[in-house]
Amino acid sequence: MKDKRRLSGILLHPTSLPSPYGIGDLGEAAYKFVDFLATAGQHLWQILPLTHTGYGDSPYQSFSAFAGQPLLISPSGLKRLGLVGDKDLEGCPASDDERVDYGTLIPWKQHILEAAYREFCRDDYDNQKLKEGFSRFVQEQGCWLNDYALFMACKERNEGRSWLEWEDQYRNPTEDIKDRLRGRLAQTIGFYQFTQFLFFDEWMRLKEYANQKDIRIIGDIPIFVSMDSADVWASQHLFQLDSNGYPLKVAGVPPDYFSATGQLWGNPLYAWDAHKEEGFAWWISRIRHQLDVLDILRIDHFRGFEAYWSVEYGEKTAINGQWVQAPGYELFNAIQNALGDDLPIIAEDLGIITDEVNALREHFHFPGMKVLQFAFDSTLESSYLPHQFTSPDCVCYTGTHDNDTTSGWYQHLPPDCQEKVRRYTCCKDAPQIGRCLIRTCLGSIARYSIFPLQDLLGYGSTARMNIPGTASDNWSWRFKKDALSPSLAEELKELTLLYGRG
Image (cartoon, rainbow, N blue to C red; front, side, top):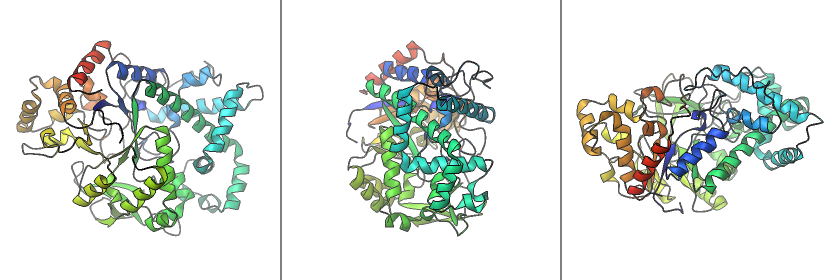
């Protein structure tokens, strides 16, 4: 990456922002968080995937690799545009300001967005600038938007069921049938196009505001896509599927730090030969789209581009799988030829990493990740200890969205490991362990230093974002609006400057 400054920042997904509407969104609180980052001397804001989540509400399982998350659209923003009124916003199920209740929130948010679209379609709605922006968006983003909107309209017509359960005319339509469906479902298709326009319009305004304050957005994409997605439905030949559309093999990882039985993600695997035949066009389009809406892109499970864990469809765990080679060099050469050599990509290289994976990452000059929590699993030496870092071309984290908060993690360490953490970080007060690990992170030679907001605030395990391998009670944590004080910003700024960041 071109910017060689020592920078630091905070990991926080927008859903975790405070809001009176049950979930963080791209409205006022997002701008205030950017202001906090700027005041605190931070130049990086890392988020999770921004895509339209599906079953389980995980940002790593989405209905599209391209479409934005409608739940992040700000109701206050809709009101300012004259698309909804106070009466429309009544009855918001926002009973808990520290958790997102997706079960009650999603239907309410859908109702609000549908009301906004009805108002937009009225003959007397006179915001001509918004109408022109929508028309331009539909035209410019058609390469992914058309299939996504049709997929969502068909999904709605089929009562939300997975596309594998649809009737034949919806399940694997020819281009002629797609055209007829577009005519039959035009109103619903228009709605999903409009929500995407609203999302990206809000997002790009927020990103511009952050960039003006010298804050760069680090986004995130999973290497694989969801089975129940527009991507798989519309391009079935690009995935390892049988003649009925069911996956032959699925993705996961073998037993590791997070799970004794591995993680069975269930995502369909890529048919890499088909991608090669098309010059990796789908991947080039995906990366281009992400770099249009982000400043830096973290690719989750980068090791899968060298070899991926392939599990027979129907297996109950990820134990019985095998490593299969992937065309990583060919893929990233094609992406570089299309988008340029110096791609702002961070490679998530955690887990079982081989010399071949490191060689692939280093060949394309993608910085990897160093997670400090991993350094203290035992009292032995570890490559995750800062004194073992061999190059500044990496990103140092206290923990990630998949880890417990540093405070919660520390409480569950064996006593001898706790002692090593205290001695290494010069921490004399256990409740301050999160802040002490942040100091260690900032002081490392890593070019970028990033820490979850939970660690800065000293929160325990109840503020954890995700527990890998579990399907419920994840992705819902939020912080309260009074948690970020001017004194906290000043303290973080002083610490950041002390270690030459910014």
